[in-house]
Amino acid sequence: MRNFNFQSNLFSMSSFYKLFPNKLGCIVRGIDLSTENRPEVIQKIKEDVTTHRILIFKDQGIVSGNRHVEISEWFGELESTFYKHPKSPHPDVFRVSNDKSEGCTGVGRTGWHIDGSFQPAPFSYSLYHMVSVPKRGATAFAPLTELVESLPKETFSKWDRLWMMSDRRSGPIHPLIYKHPKSGKKVLCFHLGMTNNYIFDYGSPNEREATPSEFEEISEEIHNEFVKDNGKIQYIHQWEPGDFIISDNLAVAHEATPETQIPRSEVGLRVLHRTTIKGTVPPTK
Image 1 (tube, helix red, strand yellow):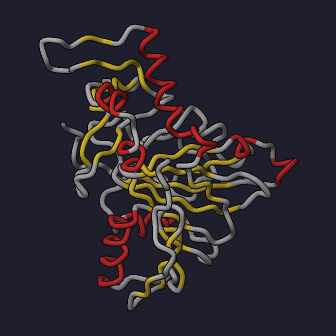
Image 2: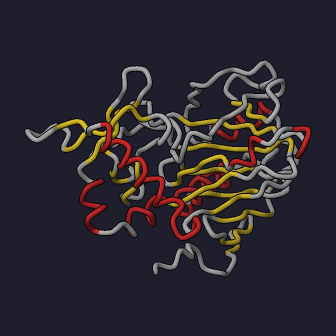
């Protein structure tokens, strides 16, 4: 059985903050994102996101919408393709909640995914901040490279022939397995809730769309890789006040847990702010 212990047990100390290895990515302490603007620190954060894929900044208090956007701009141009809730603190901040008067509800529950698979180039980064933390309502993350590398040979060979057809807009077609534009490691471009169909051998003389039964089978296969062995590959993030997460969206899949939909009356108010950064490299084989 493959051991999904993604990081070592020792923390590393940069000249700017401390990194504590987590099951996935690193926990970051010793930095105040509300005021940090030194170019050398920003560069270090960007490098660490590339290396560790997800950084969980602790004890950040409440990060304003404007500041959330400023931090996001360290990584590129924001791309906002979602519904603008009236209580969102900024047009580029997606506000999610378990109370429809406070934010968009039912978000992230259509299946494992990366953000922006319906774009010609999926979002490069996602940045999350829990403004109001409920008693229950975790977010599940999973590393894509480890998932791909652990696939049985037959499954990998099948998936490597597949391309996904988005169900949005002009319906871009992306390879299911491709190389991350920065790391060069194999990752997935997918969204289990926003895929119209899969295509075998796209662009070749043998190109064909999956049959309805094959579509269901493939989607189930992908889902099962995330949940098998009691979800061993997953990292379940239990939100705490002051948490701010920066994720390499192309390297880390995620899904909202069922508990995120529990009513406010039972677990308290859940308000999550998220921004997404425009992708610059379309997935290619």
